[in-house]
Length: 547
Ligand code: G4P
Image (cartoon, rainbow, N blue to C red; front, side, top):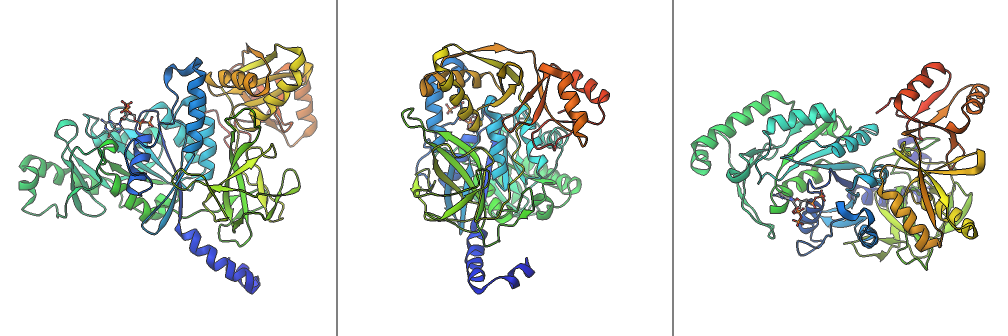
C-alpha cells in the first residue's frame, strides 16, 4: 500500500485521503438467523436506536408465511417489501451503518448466501429456547467459507430458555466457531433480571419495554457490597459464580480473533423488549471491521485503492410487469463511485454510465451522487447485469467469491404454449440471471433443467413467467439431488467422461459441465472411479467435500 501511495500522482493522493475518511466511517453487515429467531425485530430495534425510524413496527417482516406456497399475492407483496428493506442505512455515533437484509425463508437461502458476499461482518440471532437450528448451521457454513466475522445475539431471554453455558457449548460444537460471552444473563424467563456486561463491567436491569429506548443501568463492580441489595443474595452469588466461571473457561476477548472469523463474541438480550440492543450496537461499532479487501481473479482489491471497483450481488425485478427494468445491487469495493461517470462492465467489455443510481438511506430511495467502499448502490438495469458482474474504471478483473451452490431440487421445464417458446426462453434466462434459480441445459434435445434450494421457487418462476413474459410452463420432477461442477487438468479425460455420462451431464449458463447425480453415493462412486476429475459443490470450486 505504502509503495502504491508513493507511486501515485498528487491528485490521486488527495482523492485517496478523502476516500479513507469515508471508508473508516462505513460498517456493512447482515443480520442472519433461522426464521422466527428475531432477525426482523432486532433489525427494527437497531434502526430505532440509530434514529432511522421513529416507531416500532415500521419494518415489515421480510418473510414468506409458511402457508404461502400457492399464495402469489403474498409472494408479490413480499417482493415489494424485500426491495424496500434490502439495504437499510443509518448514522449512529460517527458511523454510517449499512444493514443488508437477508430473506429468512429457507427456499431463498441462496439469495442470503450471495448477500453475505457483500458484507464485512454478520450478527447471528439465536433463539434461546430453540438454540442452534438447521438454517443457523447452514448460514454459518457460508460465513466460515470466507472467514466473515460473526457476533452472536442470543435472543428472547424473557422466555425460559436453555442454560447459557449449554447454549454456548452448542454454538461451539454445532457451528464450529470459538465463542466468547461479552454479556451474561441474570436468570431467564419470568425471573430474568438483566445482563452483566463483561466488556463494560456494568449491570443492566431488565424491564418489559417494547417501545422506549432508555434503560436502567448500574455501574457496579461484582465485588461491590451493594450487589445483593440490587439483585437479592441468591442472584448476586450466582452471577459472581457464573462470571468467575466464564472468565476461567473462555479466553479473553480478542478483536483480532473476532475480525479474522475465529472467535464470536456473544450477547444476551430480548429484541422485542429493546433489551441488550444498545450494548450490542455500541460494541459492534467499537469492534466490527471496516470495509474489507475483496478477492478477484487477478488480485486482492483493497478498499483504500483510489480507483473504483464494485460487483453486483443481487438483482431485483421490477414489480410492475410492464417495465422490464430491474434493480441491480452493487457493492462498492474500492475508490469512489460517481453518478454519470462511465465504468467498464467487464463481462460485456463495454462502458456504461448510470444517470440515476440510488442509495437506501432510511429505506428511502435517494439519488446518489457518490458512494464509497462498503456502500451498496441501486442501479436501474435493462438486462445488462448478471449476479457477480464486476464494474471498474478500466482494469480487467472479475471479483470472485460469489459462488452458485449446488441446488437440491431439480425439475425440467416444459413449454405449454409452442407459440410462446421465445418468451419462455427469454423469461427463464432473465429469471435465472436474477438468481431466482439455476439453469442447466442438457445438450441432447436442448432440455432445460431448473435447480433450486426450495419448492417455492418453482411456483414463483411459473407465476412470473406467465405474468411477466406471457409464457406458460409445467414442471417435470427429476430424480437428481446434486449438481457437481467438473474440472480436470486433463481436458481429454474430462471430455471422455462427459461423453460417457450422456444425459447425466448438463451445462450451466457459462457452459461449464455439471454432473447431475441421483445421490451422494453416486457422486462418491464416480469420484473414486475417476480420480483425475474434480467434483465441486459450488461453482467457485472451493468447497471440496460433501456438506
Ligand atoms: P425473524 O425475522 O427472525 O423471522 O423473526 P421475527 O423478528 O419476525 O420474530 C419472530 C417472533 O418472535 C415474533 O413473534 C416476534 O415478536 C418474537 N420475538 C422477537 N424477539 C423476541 C423477544 O425478545 N422475546 C419474545 N418473547 N419474543 C420475541 P410473532 O408472534 O411470530 O410475530 P408478531 O405477531 O409478534 O409480529
